Image 1 (cartoon, helix red, strand yellow):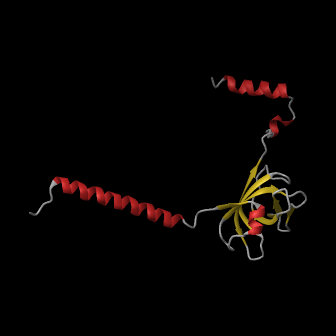
Image 2 (cartoon, one colour; image 1 turned 45 degrees about the vertical axis):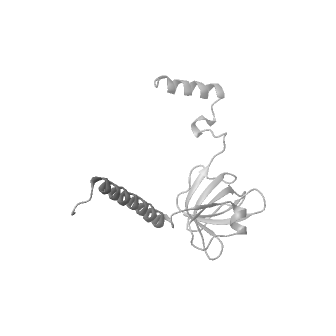
Image 3 (cartoon, rainbow, N blue to C red; image 1 turned 90 degrees about the horizontal axis):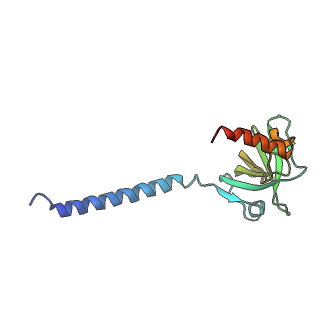
Length: 156
């Protein structure tokens, strides 16, 4: 009478395993709830801004004529636009990606401050589908194709 039948032991082990898996999933979801970054376009951020300090991502185009380096030499200020009317002022302190220029696509990770400025902690510059590396920009199409062929010959 002291021991369970093997059939019941297996059932108890399966139930305990399921409870452990569900518990681990709930703990993981609870601990990651503040790590989720919501993605906003400029018009969405203007219409329904997230709470101050909430981590979000802002995606759009760097507005022409808005890029300026602040007096400290490390901080930049610019505006992100959706090519329509919505504009969001952004401030970023750090090293700017090589592809980051006015008119280019950008995804800024950060949060809004109390004044409505988006304070970015990370910038991701995007290029269009016509991107050409600097090394190939001054080559003709024939020269670039020949260089690409030469670099792939040893890979086969």
